[in-house]
Every structure is written in C-alpha cells, then in structure tokens.
Length: 189
Image 1 (cartoon, one colour):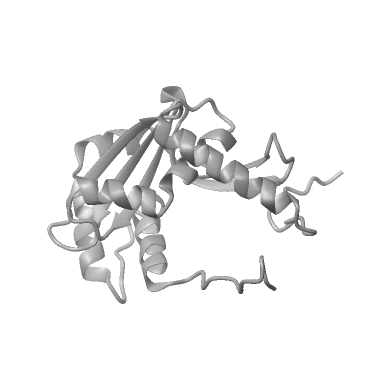
Image 2: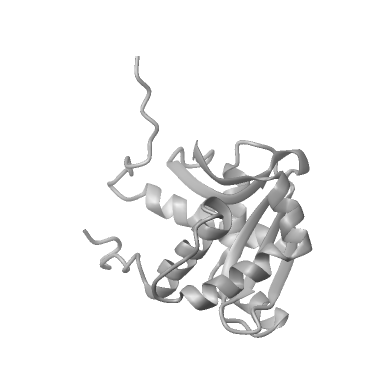
C-alpha cells in the first residue's frame, strides 16, 4: 500500500529495534537481562538510567508503558499512543529516547530533527489525564552513556510548534480515502 505515492518505511530499523528492546528492559521487564546484539552497551545504559536520581524518582511513581486511545478533536480520526511513563498526580508524561548525541546541545537539535516536538504535543493532547509537563530523557548509546534531560510545559513554543505539525498531518490524512481501524477499541454488547 502506498501513502502519498510512497512505500511504507521499514518499521524495524536496527536503531528502532534497539530502542524498543531498551525500553522493554527499562520500563516493563526490569528483571530480565538483555541478550543478543547490543546487549553489552544496553546493560551499561540500563545501569546508568537505573542510577539517575530524577529518572528513578519518577519511575517509582509512574504508570509505565500505558496506551492511550482517543478521537482527535479537530478531525475526529482515531488516534493512539503508548506513553513511556505517566504520572497523573504530577500532570506529567516522561519519554525516554536512546540517542547518538554527544552533548545536550546536539540532543536538543535531535529533538527537532526527529520531531519530538510533534510527539510531545500529540501525546499530551491525547492523554486521558490532564498533562501540563513533558520530560524527555536522552540516553547516549555510546560510552559514556550520558543522560540529557529536557523538561517542557505543554504550552511551550517547542510543543506548540509540534502541535501545528501533527494537526496539519491529521488534516491531510483526513482528506485520504482511508480510515485506520487496526487500533480501535471494540466494545462487546
């Protein structure tokens, strides 16, 4: 199937696969050690994150890997997201990224390059709980596995720019003769 004349992108690039496995071990299956390709650096990264005081404090209070389903208010299209961590009482979403950035400045550049602004807005707007803050943790994939932290308010210009991006994408998608159904929640009578 083509979208706007383009073939779908490969959904399991090595970087995406590594990031998915890292998230799983960090947030869901904390007791199982990673194995296979990239296990050694992943173990080091997990150790760094599990010793990062702010991350540990948030993780202890959070609901991990929580799916959200909603209909977009403007287009009425069905939407979904999977939040890394949700802290409803703090009105906070936490998102963890693996990164090749070597500095805080480079990580901030990557936040724009990879459109984390769009993701932050989309996740915040679709969350079933009131959200006013969004924290990004970027963990280096290479030694020394530094952690970069970006804390945003959901009305920050960075997030507002992302909001305009995702709203434009959804409006364009709405014009297509296709409605996604694969993640709709089916109710049984």
